[in-house]
Figure 1 (cartoon, rainbow, N blue to C red):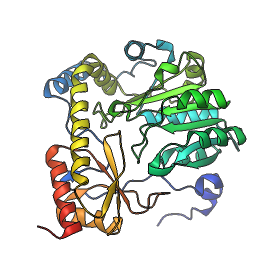
Figure 2: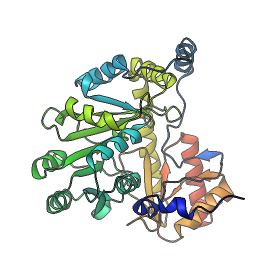
Figure 3: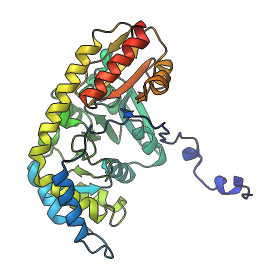
Figure 4: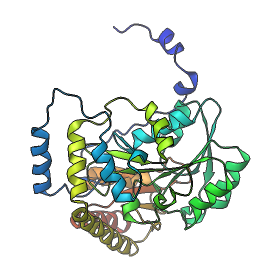
Length: 364
């Protein structure tokens, strides 16, 4: 029997206890299209090269405290200063570190919503106040409202995810410049899906020290299982953010994998183009089905609103009857009736179309 936990819980922050944890419990299915992962693994020769480098590492030693050579490679890729690169155990870790050093009790973080739910959670854990600005029609960004809200709330930070998860919408050209010019906030740009479409804010780093850009190797690069991401910002800002990360936060094997990937990044760009082409093919086939609406997307997923069947019913039947797992986002703000479907292989997407056709029309 476990001891009573009430006294221990009483010593924890009430504000944190009031938050909903980020959880993802999911059934195991033959077709997994719920986490926006790459549809295929790295090429076998790259996997062998990563394993060979890992085998040569001294596993009893800590990895580099600051992986300078890797940071220099990342900086060169983006024409940025190596001292302005901070690597993390996934981009989520460097987002968390950034909010930890920027946000204190009562500080306001503004973000458009619906968006990645972790932003609200991390803001709350840091003691801040999350202020959501609804996306406009077709989930387009309302830059006027974001800027106006950030200014009126004296926001400490504005977070934008472009392409946005779970909608796939992108910031219009000039939006980041406006947020930097019209507010005094840190502007945090999460570009986890940028390789699939949309503008990048990286070119603006030389114009403002209040800009922080986050990237990941989990989506287009396909290293979700090894967890690697990074932030790009002014070196002075990176120095402060680094105070909130744990020592040796990225393990040596992941660092080796990131090095190999950066040496062959041009090869991986072809797979990204294939995913984008498959996305467009899938969206075109969705347009032929009744009872649903697919929203415009520039990410590696599609947000669909079901009009004749409850989204949860579609979700459950895809799992039970067709062995297909997608993401049920219908509980989120403005997302009633919606499912998010990651782009998998052509065979995966054909299976989804066939399943949806049967569910929506009854045709075999």
